[in-house]
Length: 447
Image 1 (spheres, rainbow, N blue to C red):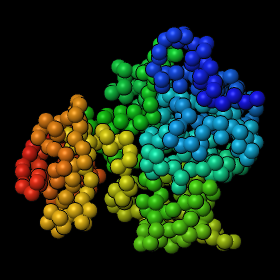
Image 2: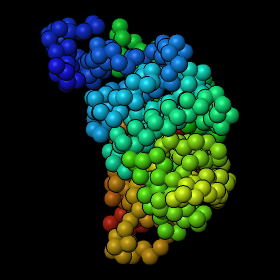
Image 3: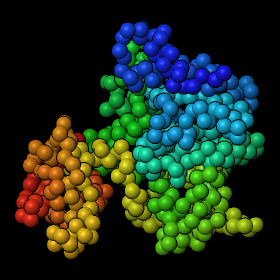
Image 4: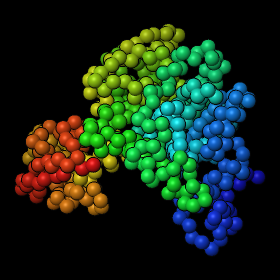
């Protein structure tokens, strides 16, 4: 009889105690969940738990490829990819059996030369060879709680099948897989970044508070942006607009298939390139494409100032080569408001305010025909996110001019402007409308 993860959590966390936690104590609920998840995975024995070196050793011994799941605990927001569904799915399980499967539950000590991915996600999967050649990636989202159009069990199965095909051809195909690894980042592992260096080690602390010892995925992105901004350098656009979603250039992919176009947005860059619904993307810049995450990887590597992506597509029985032109500023079309990165940028650029563009009806009501009109949805109350509150900004204010600019129509454009024109310590004059009256306030630009 299979014991569910929840039942096992209850048994371990509340009946017998575990690793320093005994019956009668009241540990942090997340601490309980993380430790129970570790006990479950290790007891079942299918996934290696947080041991990449062992996975590589086992892959060399068996000749199997490796599947790495970067995921701290089962994602409560992505029920479609719950651990138990993955492990028991009748289509997925035979595919998983052909991999050495390893679960990485924290990024402490993670090799960032190999594992580069969208750190604003709750999970990411890598399919790779024992020599760390990457076959493909899996795992995408466009909002904290929106997954339906991005990932699925079927889509994961197609990606695994593709990785197995590439593995069967390896090493004859090694040259076309080289670009699936990126250039080295600023530091080799997360705990080496200055903002994380004095807070974390290269390993999780299971002898103490394991939750507090963990470097979460999003903290890598935060640390990378902080590395530039703390030196009064602009944050690279690749970090402000990371891993652009395919829909931002007009590609609507079918989440149940391998890079199959469900539709193409009218008047988009994809339509201009001649891409059509029903096309299957086989390669981008000669890289084999296994999933939406692979598409994002290629897009992520492109120059924000503009570039060309070479696509090989299958349309019916015909193979076609298509050039996708990305103009200057193309990254800025992606919606980044859902990303954790936006929280950090609000601390820098808006003093903790969350802003949203007024609707046409709201503009008519207050008499703003065009130009900037960003309503303050909320004002932070703690730390640097309280800077706007301390400067006198209120919820409901409408920002109509920022540092003399009246064309920053979205919060995202405001972030980009501050990043390119200001440094920590600068002060910006902001004009707001409050109850029909115009008011001038001064906002600090922060680290």
